[in-house]
Image (cartoon, rainbow, N blue to C red; front, side):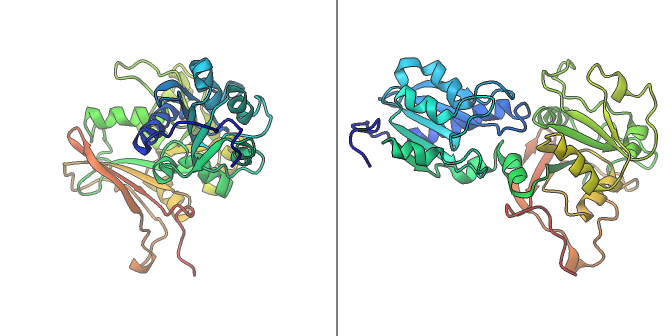
Length: 361
């Protein structure tokens, strides 16, 4: 590496400080999650020469500053000779904003730590350019942890060309999502329901079937605990051929009208939403729609709020998922299990190489 570039004479910062900064950047990106599509939700932390945090930033909505620019603006002159810690490789292209690499070089940053390389060829190359300018570059800091965070859906979209699908369901211990009479409010407790609203605000779109809409009349909005609407509201999508009444809460919830896609084919739904720049999609449909998405290999993550309760009758969480024999079972990897108030949350994901894959026939 060049000895006369920005990295010359930069102080060595302990790895624990860098990892703490990366987790701070990850938390910052989580606050932007759901508002940046089609751009990735990135977080950046700038440390001064002594390793003190002097700037934190996250990606703004499209057209606004990227995470690096926001963090550098907060850091000001203290960024010179310092370190930038960023969840994704700084971009090296001009779109609606100037390249983030330019900002880092102009600020005189001496070191850059990035968790992940940018898989988008149009934006990649930032780390190579920084190295060429004499900046000390390290790639891979907390890479696995960052890849499971707010960038998960965007990375999936880059890899597959379709939205990342999370199926969310609340169920009893015996796998029921409603009682025999169809009632389902409420299977889970208030903390679990609050977590669902926090999940919704991270999403670009929520999908439910006409069966669920007609039976439950959901608003599919993201709300605060006091019932007020959150600033970010995902696109609400209804799929199916039946009409939705004009007085349904989907039309009267005080946010933009829902999109009605008159199909039940998951491939058609995902193709349409991909054209609308949807990256993260939350599936809140009933057993039939969920089964169709699983059968199509179109579920990437499953979030189950499991209530310590029994119903003994009523619909199960999943119907007709294309599994006829145990050899065809759809297995996922458990990412997290924890208490959610009176309930249990199980977070299970498919292999990072791609979506749920049906066995070869």
